[in-house]
Image 1: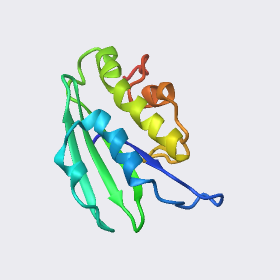
Image 2: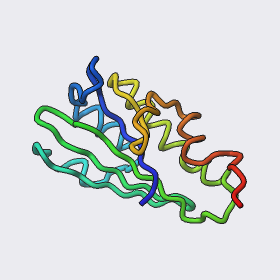
Image 3: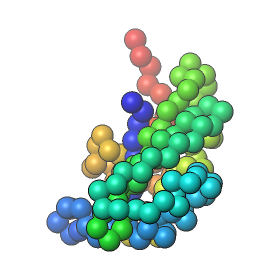
Image 4: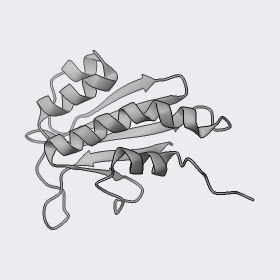
Length: 141
């Protein structure tokens, strides 16, 4: 399992809030996934739609969780296909995906957050890059 970031709205109490507009979500995700036919399928409450994107260094799985009147949340899972290679190549490739997620969060009034640590929310592209692929990873050993 890779690292997961999500875009979702929250209410003032920190609970799941209003759903995201379908048209805004699909338009933004087309910037990443192009003409993936999943984005054109009818969306029914409870559906989980899956999208896949393979890059040279990274791969991405997108999950769209459909609610009653829109999208509950969007989750993108990030995989580094070459852990033993320099991190700058991975950072470069995931930046475009992060930019789209940040733009989606800003456009919809949602938060971009780390699924494993929801306290890390309202992430910027730079913060998400440092979370997923630290430029100076800690020494191990």
